Image (cartoon, rainbow, N blue to C red):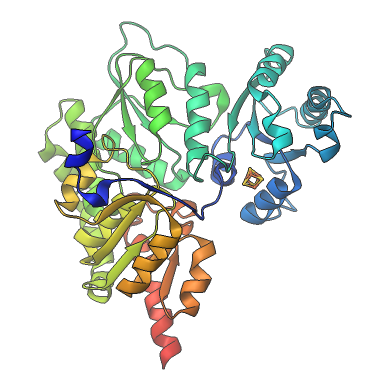
Length: 420
Ligand code: SF4
């Protein structure tokens, strides 16, 4: 109690109504990453619609996700859902022999909650072995915010990772899905700095899972991986405290934290990254001129809000009025909070009505929020940025710093043009 009462009000979590996508949304970016995996959502027509509209209808490509719709009649017990699931999986694997890893993804309709997906996955894993692994995770909208889907998926993968040899040299594991272009840039930078071997989770192929053990050092690429980090810790790996690679400064500090864990001096990181740092700062300059001094209000949505606010404040000179985050992981975000400085208006908050009241009272220049809030706030005369774009767009790293800043300049420019 004394620890709780010592916290400033803004750090006390608030709970209430919230407006966020569910964890199934993570499939939209995860299915592009693990190229021999398939995501079979066990859900309702609503789940199928969400995925179709979020991922777009892929007419020319074979999508790597689908929804097995559990009908209401199953709820009444007139169909054996397990047998139906086995039939769907068998048909899928017969049609798609390229699948090496099948995720059964749980959802929140009551007929799905009644199913024991973990047990179904274990049963199917046995019957599909050795060619296909079958795992399960939940993307249910009841208990998750949308980026927790990735966390649940990666946490489900961790027990499958092979054990690193006992005498293995230290290795770096970058955890969190990054766009391939970003991953390739980071791999080149790690190599130039002298960090090796470096592996990524999720891997591009399920048949190339990275080994993990006490010599593994984990660098989180995304701030929403609490369960994954915990699972990796249980395998003996150690998380490197670091800010997240947003913006020029964030990327350099992220690389420097990894380098320090491998005994490499910060000067080496500065030397290797100098050209990319200069390009990033040049790309940021016009946006800084446009955005400096603008007041920004971040609704809690993806959990990227704290690193993002640090970037907006320190590299673009914006003034955060409120930095809402659905969950605040104090250990993983400690380096970010230190950069933001004492008194930063961070709130761990999921109470949308109160957030809206504070936002309306503050009248910020820019609001970063979910899709459901953007249109009403635009109608009230506020400029908004859809926070989901920050998850679907490659924004990490030096080369993307200018694009990231541009995402925030665009809504303000649009409003300015509409006013003329
Ligand atoms: S999991 Fe729940 S919240 Fe998500 S789409 Fe399906 S029904 Fe909707």
